[in-house]
Image 1 (cartoon, rainbow, N blue to C red):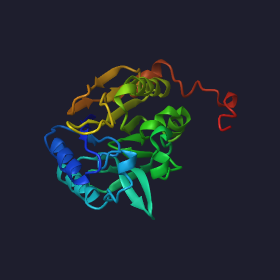
Image 2: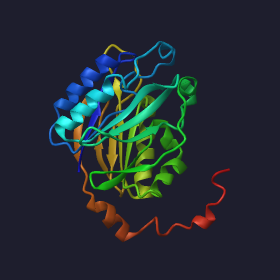
Image 3: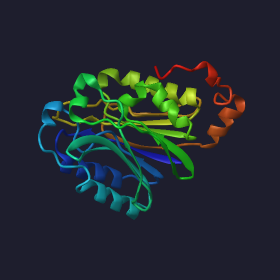
Image 4: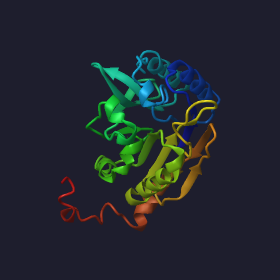
Amino acid sequence: MKLGLVQPGLIPGDPKKNFHHIHAMMESMEEVDLFLLPELWNTGFIREEFSRELEDGRSFILPAMAAFARERKTPVMMGTLAIREEGQWRNRTYVLDERGEVAFTYDKAHLFTPTGEGEIFTPGSENGTFPLLGTTMGTVTCYDQRFPEWVRKLMYGGMRILLMPAMWPLSRIEQMQTMARAHAMTNQIFVAVVNGTKAPGERAMAGGGSVVYDPWGVELLKLGTEETTAVVDLDLSLLESSREFFNLWEDRRPQLYTGLDR
């Protein structure tokens, strides 16, 4: 399975410019089975600028991306869009199938308090898995991965690939990558994190460093800080071979883990 990661420079508060730029990046990519985009790529996130009436991500971006998926006959994990629903902003992931239809949505559950995300967005409260390209996938968003219980919950749905859109700052990129690798190893899954990066002449919101790890925690891809695209090929047979060697899921003792919800 070939994942196509798009690591764009993000411009705060300019959905149309961001869309046309990222769409062009995607158009240039070949031999991709699933496109991956980062968090809040339509608007970026600078709290003081978010008080303006920004355009809802569904107004033109969602139909345009659906058309792209249909034309390429290729699914798109759209990363997250800032959308306005019942007067409230939500940080929502959209997954489109090869027909351009919405196959799954997820609202970011854990909002990053240091930047005031909770003052702008309403958090989600549900996660789940979805079938795509013959396997089972799940998704969380950026800060969500600091809560391993939330990721582990997806394993009950049979997750084999974790897709994680992010807008992670450069100063903590190593933490982002270390945690993603830990999720891959402790759950014996593939993990792909796609981050945005700084656009020339714009305020820095994300620092690149998108990564992909296999179920052994082996690094399959690590990008730098530059705006770029990349394709990485996942050998799905590793999902089974890693568990044939030792199966962490079967060796768990859930009766010992009570109280984790306290």
